[in-house]
Length: 86
Length: 374
Image 1 (cartoon, rainbow over the protein chains, first blue to last red):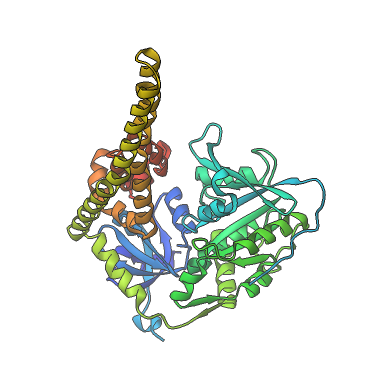
Image 2 (image 1 turned 45 degrees about the vertical axis):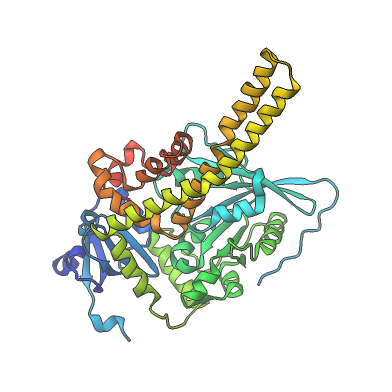
């Protein structure tokens, strides 16, 4: 976790269309549990669809809108762009 | 398509309980309505504001009592909907259902399979209604229902709830499940039912059963629409336009049946005045009974049309986007974004408005979520 922490950044720091892997969160347990149930499991790949308020992301086939403050609590490791376009 | 023969039960009809579960917005209630028709009734669980719909229907000799449970993403969540689902399935609230029908959205299969994975741990037989297969096809995703059924060890019925496709097969599959024994658990289902383990399992099932064709930019287009509709300025403009259109349609169209109803009842009042002599009896019938019923019935077209238009907005996904736009404004009053629906309906009548407040799933204990715009 410490190793990941050093390279992880808040999801809100990513530009639109960037992909990243979810590492951990600074959110409260209840919010985290709800996001997990919506498919934002540890290690899942997220894509930023819209910056700002609301912050929209895509996880697998689902797009999810959330408050920017919630997205800022998700710490991710950016993936290279070439990764997503085989 | 999976077709299951109706069970060979004869003689006395047997009532069996079936619970319908699924993620929110999977078309579960549409399926429930198609199964049970207008005979369903809505009630609250004692001591909760969470509603459940109860209905019944017949398949051959079998009388089936169906229960439409509130939408849940996961059974292990600490949300009231999940708690109630756990209690119903575990037999804490009345007799446990004899079978579980889980409605899943073919467009979001992985997320929906997590709930299926949780339900497979229960002893009851499970029937999967693979809904919105038409929409998934349009998005380039084809799901092999038979293969999915083999992977899960249960009957999977592809359905399109809106058009009623697959519902006869679903009825037959439910009847068969009620008479069958508990299903064997899939061998690869993770023993540890954490969201991560279940998601990994769901992903492996998805890869196994789904064929994905190239998608023709539909996602990019709908993302552009998303950005526009949730934009602080354009989003608000779109909201004002949509609401203006809604009210204009409502008042323009509803006046036609309303004028008709008023005319009919006015004629009926005059007719009763001719039948009865002047006096208290005439007043009671013409003004009291006919006038009273007219005063209530006249609002029916407006209420029905408003509900229809709101459900249209909901089905297109606009309400979800509009909630984000309104969240900024309503947060100042301590309300969540989707509180605009009751506020909106209150313009026509207070009763549907109060009824629609049950959409606001945010008791005080979940205040944090409410403010963060869920």
